[in-house]
Length: 194
Image (tube, rainbow, N blue to C red; front, side, top):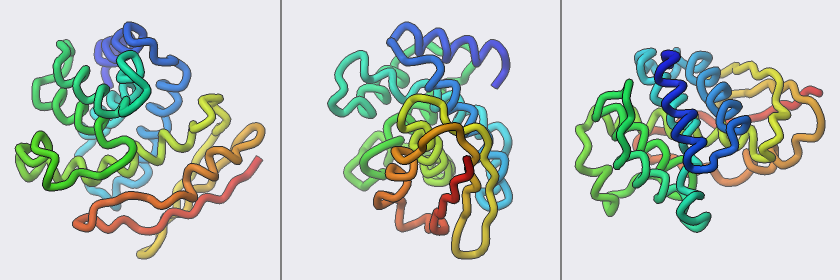
């Protein structure tokens, strides 16, 4: 993201009580995952800035209610002015916020279904990265220091270097991942290193 875009998402996060250190960590991890796994998803670099922006804003919905905060985050972002981002970019960011947890897009989600096919595909490739990034700071204590990605045709291995206990992050990654049937990502394996 540009300096102005980063300032915009951080200011918006502050307005809605988002813990800035957690937002920055999830943003950093999502950017790293996007870059490291670019040969797999093959999305243009401009998509990485949208992923990072969404990482800063996934928790704005807590301002309204912790229950279904992902849906509230979608609403807040979709209906906010975001200087430095186009309307289409803002809509993609809002959808990333919506699907950062719980269900993946379904035919019943009309806002998603109304998107152009290329945006739907882009979202289906970025949502798993955002979910991984958020889960890698599940404790909100920024324990992940470094991350390296390796992959084969069947799995992605995350080599995680951390300070302190990352049991909560490992637990979060061990749950059943909810991915779209139309985009079959490889399995995820996390190897922790202190």
